[in-house]
Image (tube, rainbow, N blue to C red; front, side, top):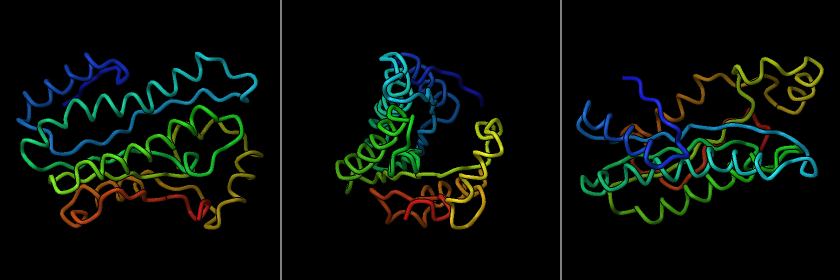
Length: 190
């Protein structure tokens, strides 16, 4: 099933939730993975660039979680995984908006984990580092070499490595894990 919605629009998110519930009957797992970047130095960053990133990356997670949480509470079961970033843990030049949004995802994760503990709902985050994605393909080689030099494992992560961590957290093996941030960054942030 393919659903499309602007995650920073609560009405569209609720419509998407309704479509999924109509097709599958319920939502047990939510992975908040929407994210954008609008990189500029803080001095050159416009209020619009700040707002766009926070709106999609953080408000979107709030809206999607808000849309599904009542059903999870009624069933006393749910798994929520928020995709943060190593940048939310350590910051990065030219990414004040992105870093703030991803750090906010970590705080949201920990707060919701405490609120829903004992109600059958786990809430965790995954904080990927530099992963082999389309976004990184446009990075010039000299900059990529500098990035790789900072990663103790000496390579980019694979999307499958991030997916594997998410799959573990939403499996039965992850039932006793909540409020945690799983760092997947090759040792970049320790």
